[in-house]
Structure formats: structure tokens, C-alpha cells
Length: 124
Image 1 (tube, one colour):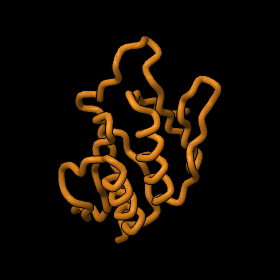
Image 2: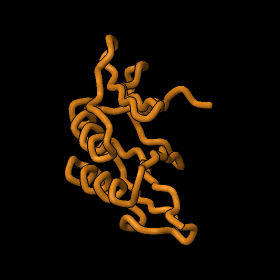
Image 3: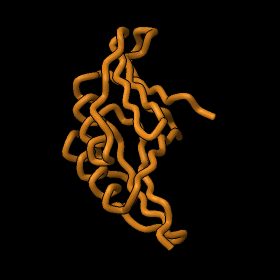
Image 4: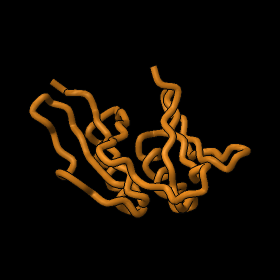
């Protein structure tokens, strides 16, 4: 259904360090920069793109928005969370943990305040 997710950033170098570390933790590759200066991360068919807003106004986090990323295992979820915190993210909600349905999840805010979650499928 979706071709990509685009989020805004006020500091693309900080975003590059943050997202690069998190995608590496999930087994992904470093992001690329396109001709417009946008960061592009491709992993398992999905694309996450980060850019300075084209209207010239500051980037702001979506109120109520969350970007969900799939992980292969609880260990990947923990590694993603640790990498995100190490590179300027803020741990939010609960620590990485198993939910009642068996899914293992973690939540962070990126350096620009965007809410992210990573989830591995239930192991039951």
C-alpha cells in the first residue's frame, strides 16, 4: 500500500547518525543521499526518507503520529533501541518489552521529536 514514509528533520547530519545506527542494528545498510539532499533508508522493501521541509519552515513532529518498523527478533528490537538512544534518541513509553499478544516492542523519539516504534512478531 505505501511506497515510502517521509519525515522532516532540522539537522540532517544528526538524523543520518541516528537512523544509520538504528538501521544497522536491524541488519540494514547505511542510508543514501539523493540529488535533493534527502536521506533514504531502504530495508526489506520499505523506504524511510528524511528531509528538510521543502516549504522552508522548521520540521515538527506529528502530534499523534507513530512510524512503525518491523524487526526480525526481540534481540533486534533491543539493539535498535540501544542504537537510537546512543545516537540522540529518547526512550519513551515502556522499556523494550513483550506485549500481552507476544510481540516485542520498543519506542523512541528521534532527535527531531518524531515517534518511532520497532516490533518483532509474536514468538508464540
